[in-house]
Amino acid sequence: MSESTRISNLYQSIYNGNPWLEVTLAHTLENVTAKQAYTKVNPNLNTIWEIVNHLIQWRRNILKRLQGETVVTPDHNYFVPVLDSSEAAWEQSLQSLAKSQELWNAFFEDFDDADLAKVYAANNHTFYEHIHGIIQHDIYHLGQIVILKKLL
View (cartoon, one colour):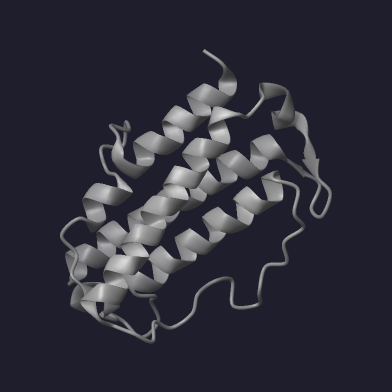
């Protein structure tokens, strides 16, 4: 099995597979309502919804980098208030997260292991570091979502 296939399987398992940590994004978010996702349990913490939107934007950011685009991360680091707290808007965010996973899965289908050593010139990190970084990023924020859910 190629390294990129192993990495792809790891990333997929964290979204909705069977990762060793026994928690996935899809399952964790499965029964979260818009009201719960929008609830700020502490004024110093982000909401579940803000975290989900942050994840989506970072997944897009890193994917664009690996596809050759130079991406400037905004000062707000993709943490922006949710303006529409409807169930339909929450469902749209969940669908956008699922779509971001589909885009990553498609990306890995044609990815060559030799490209793991490529360097993104804007920050001098390899593609390997970017891919593992986005996986670690998802897991970090998944932990936050799990805790926020318990506090609701």
